[in-house]
Image (cartoon, rainbow, N blue to C red; front, side, top):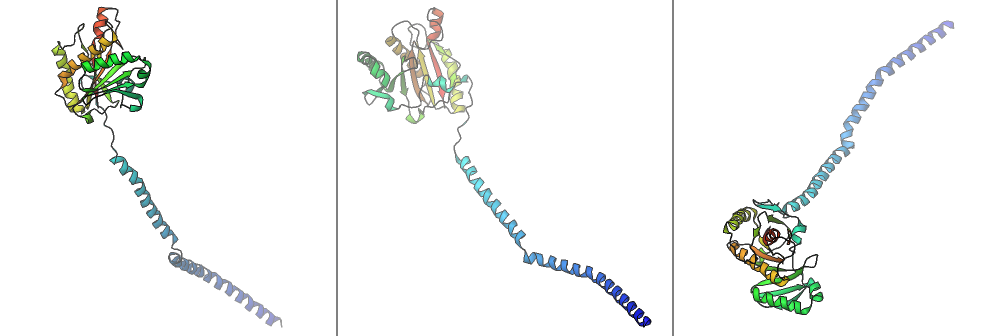
Length: 291
């Protein structure tokens, strides 16, 4: 009996050992097969990564297209040319030029007091309401006497000094005013009560600068500002300054640019009118070039 039991126990132990080794040998093979099956099935069962890559590419292309549209629009938009300050001129600020010039004539701020085919006269509404009518009529009479073919604007500066803007042009489109101006470094001076050009060499120096400026800078208009000293009454000085600007402007007839006269008379002196030297400096023409 003991022999049979011993034999049975021995067989049981051998079977247990055999099953243990058998399982250990087969386990790695099953895991490997499972991994291989998963590896094979992943591309077909889960194609999402590939789809995501395609969507990202499409989105990027669309984004690039959206970004390019405004870039194209910016290229087509006209960019103002940078002003290259020509020889003989210097830069001025918009405040400098707005003291003597305006961008456009807005009829809401002006009253028309004379209308003829060759001469139109407008007056600032403030002056029209606050200056005596006989003074306006007196000024208008002088305008009609001295100025035959222009658009004349009777204006005021910030100190309420009265002055004239007189626009003459060969082509209205050329007289497109803006605040992109340069100022000539040269100033032409007149003798006492003189209106004619006598110092031709001074004018020729300016004209040589102007030739280069118009050709290279593509200037569109010229503004001549005429001043007098304080001797004499305001009305006389106003039209004395006008005759001086016209005299100087006659030297510019060869240029195909708009021409504008600003007649300031004795206002804005650059030196004291108490001395002869100071008065000589105040009898002047200043020149602005507009682009």
